[in-house]
Length: 249
Ligand SMILES: [Zn+2]
Image (cartoon, rainbow, N blue to C red):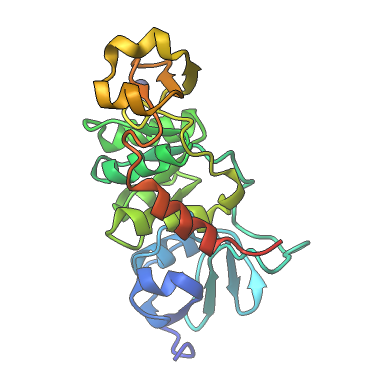
């Protein structure tokens, strides 16, 4: 493999193989094409890629591939310093997200963890791409064609179809273990929660709640009132999973 001049050899490392379906494959060269196109032709969107080596030399996305070359494609890795190596990964941005329409449950999960999540049920691809660029948000989508749009710099395709597992993937991928801040953001509208006096909200509370709790918070966006346990029942077990996944100091 890799020596046939009609093909390039693509080798995927880490969890990129889950996207390409194989760790090693040959791709016909055909028309001159960029490394970006070659990698995406087998299903790996460019925002997933941190480092590309062609015959052991680091290259950028626009480098044209030639038959017989061996292309090694790496995801971001956190345990290895890459000082001085020209990666294709853009400078990191703050962990503010933008979620595709099919990831509504993940949006609520990430908001429960305190993360800023832009989410609309009616957003189309051009709008998602525009907001990702304008607001420098990290695009989360399982639509790989959307992630392959050239203007998208920061993005991730959740591998799992389970929202809890997806949330853990995001925490792991962006190293957010210590930025988790439960009970700070509204799951419905992404607003921030502020403490509010019990007396100010007591007429909005079910009697059993009023009797059981003294600490309340209100969303600055939609006015929703929260108390310990409200909308967060399933969160505690999940937080244990985040803690269990957190690497030691
Ligand atoms: Zn709200």
